[in-house]
Image (cartoon, rainbow over all chains, first blue to last red; front, side, top):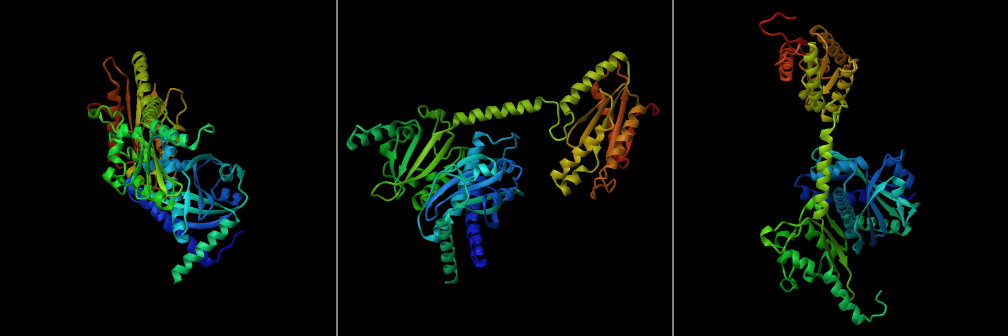
Length: 204
Length: 328
């Protein structure tokens, strides 16, 4: 499995905390309320491990927002929640409490926007550090098991998955989500280069 | 499709198509100046193409400077990142009107906005903003929501505890009251209130409060065995029990059993004035309805007994008695 030194690992966590900090600021502006986000855990895993992390050995339904990125960093990214958590998050953001069991069409769109904000912010921070250009697609919305979702070009992903645990805090509610990046070998090497560049800048 | 046309023919054709499509299209150049403004936008914004071409985002949409849409535009131009701006979180980002022909009835259009980087050969990156009218979808969803709410209110089951809800209670009480009148039989009502429940919620949180109510409801219903007896959630932390053909003595026994089963749950409640665990107070009232009697009288008297139980220190049963009568 892909290994980083402790220093590189800490730097990566810091980079993503910067990213989600910006996403939280954007979400706060939308709801006019304080939204805070943090990344307590950064890990490199395989697909099966991600499923376990997401608490879905029982094939629980996951709601995911996916985006492709190219350029500085080629990856497919996902913001994922257990389905009931995504309901909670959207309803906190929107301020509606009717308990339908699935996200409605409009709520799905809101969820897509939340994913769009989080994923763009994370990737923009990486792009900034790399000094290279990054292209991002529009978000798409998916519901299914973790295995259904973590695929690329309709194939289940057998490479490395970089996962971030994300804690959202809205109105005294805490909601856990996960961001996953599908990484192939070139992407992993790019990532390591960017981390080193970031560390070099920090240490002057 | 266009393989027979030359490039010279294709360009004006594509340009006409973009002008004509029934969705909003605006293109900004690297300096955020408008270089394309299609007819749909023209119609719904009441701004002519000639008036906006070459102007910047800030000049045309002064109220939207530094809004999420503006930030998305900057991100698309600088970083090549695409953004979605959803109707649910933003309502109407652009000042567009549904019926633009009639400015007096200017209803803002509900929009879904997509902001996408656009590569233009030989030029710095542009940005494409696509706007869809989602008013119909929003209205349809609101209708669905209302219908779901209506359905929910028509059911007879309390969503949290699974026992009968207030609506079912009201109907059942009416039925049993009529029956008791006809048969001249006694009808009893117990009103139950969880002691110091506000303190419980405030200190243990609403989730645990809900859990507590559910366990109490289960315990209370375990005491009832006759088919026409009914336990209902009357309000927040209030329950009520309808006991047909039951005398005051019988109802008091049921109430006392209910008090005991709740106490036996031994749910910790460090903030109660009655006990270190969760307890209930119960008020009992019994009536043999006469011709002019009303259900409200039964509820009122059970409520007064409950009030006395609370006043006397909670965690107890009080049976209502008319002030001019001896307890019976």
